[in-house]
Image (cartoon, rainbow, N blue to C red; front, side):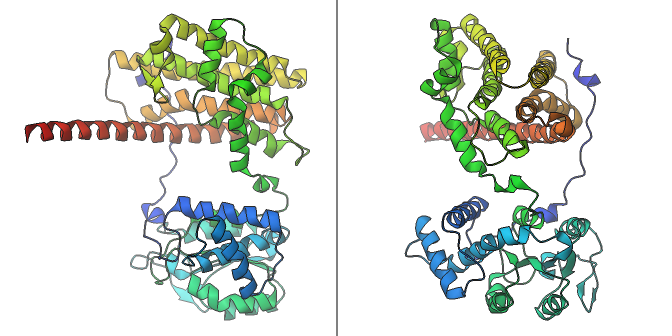
Length: 476
C-alpha cells in the first residue's frame, strides 16, 4: 500500500536559477533566430568537420568557402545572411580537438562585460576588467566559478591587447571566448596569425548591453578534455539508430517469432509510435561508460535496450487502464481497442518479456543480477508513485509543490533510472556511477513530468478555445 500523499517524504528542491540568467532577447538578424535552428547549424557543422576534416588555422576567405557549402546543405545556398555566423562556428569545431588536448591550466576564458545586467551589476572594474561580485544576476558568475574550478585563467574584459600580452608570456596556449560577430571579424586575423587554438561562442546580440549567449555551448566548450570521450558521441545519430530497432521485423529478430494472437497484440503495441528515449538512454549510457570505445554496438545490447522499452510500454498500458484513457499516439489505447482484460494481460506479458531478455543476454552472472535488481526496484518505485497519485485521486486535496514533485519523482524518474543503470551495468560500470545516475534520473524525471503536464495543459486549453470559438460562431 502506498503511503498517503500527506506523509510522502519531501525531496530537496535545488535553488532556483535567477531569472536574469535565462532572460530572452531576440538575436540579431544575422544569427539563426531560435535555439533549435542554432543547434541544427552546429550539428551540420560538426558533421561537415567529421567528413572533410578541415585543418586550422585557415584564412578567412577559405573559411567562407567551407561555410557556404554548409549553408547549401542547410538550404541557404543563395542566402548569405548567416555566412559569418557559420564561419565562426566552423572555426570553433576545427579547433575543437586541439583545444581538448591542452590542459585547463593553460587556457583562458575570456568574457565580455556586456553579459552582465548593466543597470543592476554591482561589480567594479580594474585595469584587467570587471571584478565579478557573485551576485547571481547573470551568467558571468557561473562561467567564472566553473572555469576557475577547472584551472582556467578568467578575464571579463574588452579588447585584444590584454589577451595578446597574456599569450606572449607563454602561460596561455588556448582561448575559450564569448564575443559578438563584429568583434570576432576584427580580431580574426590576429588569432589566425598567432595560430592560437581558440573557440569563440557568438553573442546573440551586438549592441554591447545586456547581451545573451547559448549557455550550453559555452559550458560544453569550457569542459572539453581529451579524457572525456562522451563528447564524441553522435547522440542524434545514436537516437535515430535506436528508433529503427522497433519495426515489426526488427522486433522479431530480437525477441523471436510471436506465438498466438495475444503476443501479436502486445508486439503491435510495442511497435507503435514512441520517442524511444528510454532504450536510447540505455545505449547512450553503455556507449559513454564501456571500456573499449569506438567499436560497433553489440547486438546483444539490443536485448537490454528492448527491456527498457518493454517495461515502459507496459506501464503505458496500465496507466491508460487506470486513468480510463481511450487515446494515445493519435490512436485508440489498447484497452479501448481490445478491452481491459486483453490490454492488462498484454502489459503483464511485456514486463515478463523484459525480464526474459535481460536473463538471456550474454552479460556475466553478476551483471545480470545487477540488472534484474535495477529493473525490479524501478518497477516497485514506479508503482508506488502511481499508487500515491491514484489514492490521492479518490479524495483530492490541495498538494504542496514538494508533494507534487515527490509524486513526479516516484512515478517518472524510475523509468529513466532503470534505463541508465541497465546500460551502466552492461558496461560493467554500475557500482562506480550508481549515485550520479540516481541524481540525474531524479532531476530528469521531474523535469520530464512537468514538461509533459504542461503540454497536456496546453492541449486542453487549445481544445477549450476551439470549442469556445465554435460556439461563438454558431451564435453569430
